[in-house]
Length: 409
Image 1 (cartoon, rainbow, N blue to C red):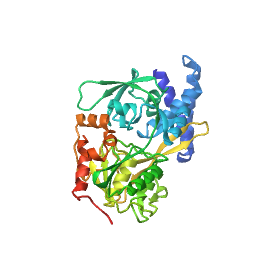
Image 2 (image 1 turned 180 degrees about the vertical axis):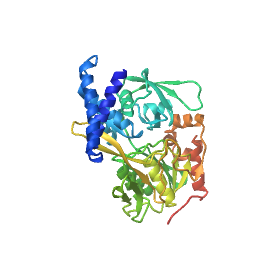
Image 3 (image 1 turned 120 degrees about the vertical axis):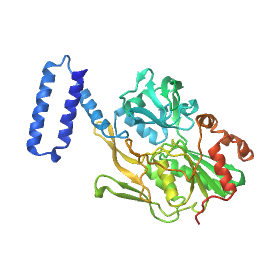
Image 4 (image 1 turned 60 degrees about the vertical axis):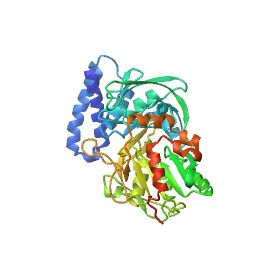
């Protein structure tokens, strides 16, 4: 195993120097490559068994990417195909968005209505085992691959939860998941409630359609629920922001390593619902695009943010297709809100996130109730608002009814 690690490191060096030839002096390249070639010759001659060059190169690429940050990732052919389907709103699995945090595979958010969500898996749960395989040192790609599979087949997850002394075991049945990102109902006092579970290719059109339907039903205020929304596509996010901002203005700025990488993303000035009082609900499972949307609205004083601190993911990943059908997800920049603030957490030191205007603390038992009964509001309808067992939503409803919401005309 020790020798295999040395092989991996050798290939890593080789690939690293090949792709960075322009950045290193010629004599330095020659010296380093001599050592690399010498080691490769030894391995070719002395290693106990024949080594597949394809496997070594693939492992080296994964190793390179894994040294960068939790969100950069080498994506295999099958995983890349699944990813393309997922951005269209269709995939098969248990419904978890994951990252690496403190060296653990960590849940960013369970997708609403999926097996993981219904079972009660929460943001920041650490996945210790998948089907008895330890996730120590495991890549996001490998963990995701293990959790996905044939519809109807079971997968066992062992979870470590904050403030729990014992591991929690979940036996989940994989489902063919078509993500319907928007669900809507009209509550009493003409309050529209819209839950947005993800920002995929259809989300902006879906939410716009639903909001026009709510307007026809007399919508006087809107509660937009972004809890446990892990994010998604930036262009979809900007389109949704544009529904609530009537001016053409910079909503998000992206800054990378160089000044030339700076990009500004503007609202389109449509603002079809700019005058609708707006409350946005967030929690620790609200990440990335969900944080951008709520942060932009907070900066523009366009909405009141209620709930708990968000996840803190404000980095930009670009999906770069590779010639062999694989792809590279690479962190290329960070998002900055109109005020100039970043929502990206420094894993070592600083926790950046969206801090709600009104914090509503929710304990684990309440989270479980929310997870198991989150569709109750759509069953109750406007006649049974008082029966909703959701502290955060109830707070939003009471604020709207008391006319304490921020309104921008």
